[in-house]
Length: 303
Ligand code: NAI
Image: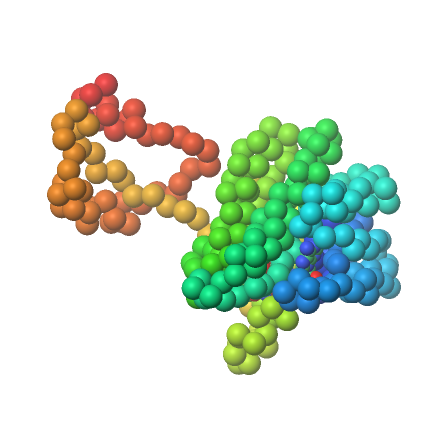
């Protein structure tokens, strides 16, 4: 089965380079009309250059696709709203939003400037919030939407020198989970990609032997799938790098249940810690807040 996005309108933020460029090209090649958003700044977000988005638009058009450029920043609410308006003004609707825009301001936590901390949160987390918030009423009204967040191992696994970036990248997963719950009834599915690819952001970090297999185009098939009608998943995190794809999922172990009517001490916790932390009993965390307290209390005869 060939997967098509014909008739759909997509926005890819930060699509002037790296992963975003590849996502935009593939989504356009599969028939969607695409807003190529990118202010064209440096890796740290400084400066700007319209030619980044313009070049990708030209490439898409050259290959017979339909695209327009947007140079607005996702980091500011009004500017982000203009990105969504660009889709509606040019193509009449919006079906797909890929929140991909990103910057880096790496430093060890001890040396981290709090201004840089906020700037990174503003682009990664608030950028995804701003764009999703402006897209939400449109997707709700048409009862269709596909939103893809971009997370990172720096958040899910941690990384030295990236406390600002890692925090922002975990935060977009919290955003994803809540929007997935709120959007489900209107067929708005919200998922995430955790990519690994050689781009200007990572080229200094990835050894050459691996780098030649880590083109950003190898991540985009998963993103295009998450953007399609074929995808029925929501709140799913897909890791993609070097042609390999996997699912990232949070798990929780079975509770060690004490009698809550009796004292529960630090020593009791200490003694039970091995069992509490034993991943052999772990199950995937469900989507949505589902307290199992009633079940546990019933099991020990308290309810
Ligand atoms: P990149 O630097 O090539 O692309 C990021 C793009 O976002 C740039 O074109 C930049 O101009 C744009 N951008 C920056 N600030 C923006 C703003 N305020 N508004 C709109 N666009 C803005 O880097 P790469 O690697 O392609 O990164 C894409 C996304 O993937 C980022 O969110 C990054 O954090 C994430 N990521 C990348 C990984 C990798 O291995 N390359 C690993 C994990 C996550």
